Image 1 (spheres, rainbow, N blue to C red):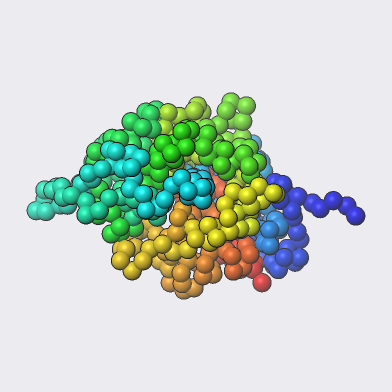
Image 2 (image 1 turned 180 degrees about the horizontal axis):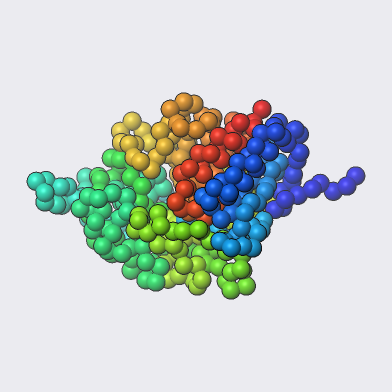
Length: 398
């Protein structure tokens, strides 16, 4: 009997073998070609797996404007798809008893001991004491009150933007301490507020482990899963595989810089700093879909994965946010679908997902035994690609 075929080290299957529609996957490919022709991206890479087997993996267009063609091992800036990897690494410490979700962040980072919350009254910013400490659970589920400077136009947003926290050239410890000196946007535990929580978590992981964030993530996740191209920078020997956008106008408009991944950064950003390939990320998702293990390497226990992929926003948490899709709650590093309807795309209750502003996105559906990834560098159209891809893949699930 011939050996099984593999893609990125994962077993493959014909679509019909795993309950996927071949005509629907052909429509997916045709749609991606249309997006290239329409000028929405230079190139796109897609992957769909079911029951642990890759049934579709394809590349379209060019690696960067003007070519060469998009290769299967293209390296993408994944921005916020960094967060799930870091959160998985964090939960390895929880499983070892070295970190508790109830731990105050100030236990590891004393600068967070006496946080203030910014409240605007009569056009003036007033600072009031936080009602309770920020805890590790808040960092994982984005209820810390920390925000991004580009996420709004309140006085607190402007202070965060002016502080230039997202600056890769400055040491991580220095940047996180500077962030701690700024007011929170909301009271801890009060609201789901997308922001720099995961970056603070990254610094906590450094303190607990004694390693740099990059080394800790590599030890706990990347090396065991053979994610050979995922890192906080792209070395010279691999730089000819780096995908580039047609433009980065939307990033500039949002006060976000195109990540410079040409050298090891002083600030390894846990929230947005990694580069990766579709093959590497497929191995990460295969581990999640497989209950925490892949090819004999166990990263987390299955109960921990299920816990992370559950909605952690109770009724007391205000989840109204433009960064959280209707119909979804949020777990520990992922959005979690809680309703079949309401959301703007087809999907199943219990699926967990996230994406990055560069145009990358994934989801894992335990109910459908599916995981899927789209990777492009199209920040001007990242939400559009996410929705189109999700609908096309779900149409293929029989």
